[in-house]
Image (cartoon, rainbow, N blue to C red; front, side, top):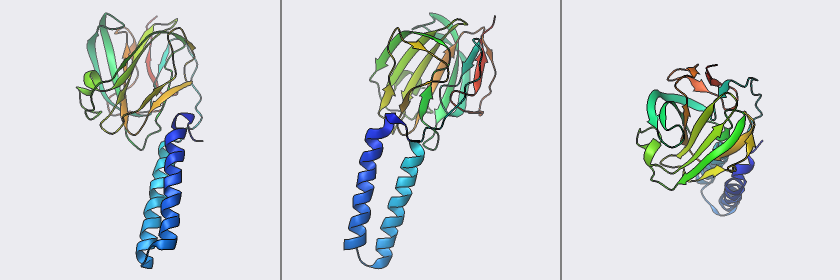
Length: 217
C-alpha cells in the first residue's frame, strides 16, 4: 500500500522511470549500457516504492499509553525545558528516521489537538542536536485524558517536505495516520517528566505500535 501523502512524488517519479527505461530500450547502445540503465532505474523504483509504503498497524489499547509517532531508531532520551506547550520540564525522546524506514507518522495518544506551529527553518542533518531547534518543522501539541504530549516533525538535510493534515481542535485517536516527512527525517516527542519511559536509546520503534511511555496516574 502506497501512502496517499506521497502520491504526488511517487507517480511523478514513476513516470520519469518509465520514460528513462523506454528511451534506454530504444535509443541506447551498446547493449551492456542499456542493461545497466534499466537495472539502475528499476533499483530506483524499488527504493521509491519502499520509501512510500504504508503498512497497516494495530495500536495497543490504553488511555495512559504514549505510542511512537514514527518508525526509526531512538537517538536521544533527555530532560529539557520545553517552553512552548509544557512551560516547564519535559522528557524528550528523539526518533531518527532513515530513508529505509516507513515515513508515515501516527498519533501517539487519544486527545484533542491544542497547539500547532510551523517553522520554516534550516536543513541540518536530522541526527544533529541543533536540528530539533533550527530545522524546518511542524510542532503539534495534543492533550488527552492521561496527559499531554508535544510532537515535532523535523525535516532533515534531504527531506524538505513535511505533511501534516491536523488542525487545532481536531479530535485524534492513537495509532491513526496524520502525515509524513519525505526522504529522511526525525520526530521529537515531549512528554511529562512524571511519565514512565518504556524505551531506551538505540531501540527501534514502530509507529502506532511501540509504547514509548506510560502516563503516571
